[in-house]
Image 1 (cartoon, rainbow, N blue to C red):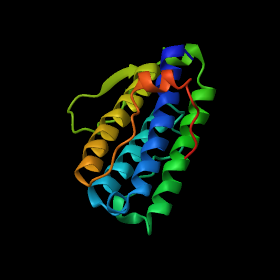
Image 2 (image 1 turned 45 degrees about the vertical axis):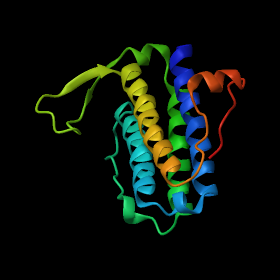
Image 3 (image 1 turned 180 degrees about the horizontal axis):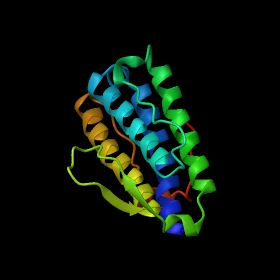
Length: 164
């Protein structure tokens, strides 16, 4: 896998884990509906992009934000998303990154979209970044200090690995 895309994926895993730590450490954030729904969405979309670049031999399974009994259950769902991402990252060849795939009409667009596997995985990482930014703003509104998870901070720290 090309080094920039690998960095984006590895950074995503680390940054997600940093956000989870900050959210769970601040009781108002851990109980905040907006944050919890956004976390669910973020990890559901990660699963969707891993599925879309796979062989699609099984149907994509959706869950709903309110379908988790506790934040621990939601975190287990997130952990499962990360496991799928790592399996995908480690199993995608450079040649596969250039393969064209069709994106389902998830966003209500009338026309199908064809992009490469590499572009789909880049979108996965960028989408997560967007929603972590929203959660960082919400953390501040709730009186917490969100972690610094810029890509440059990850580089500065020596590209630490993540564990959800």
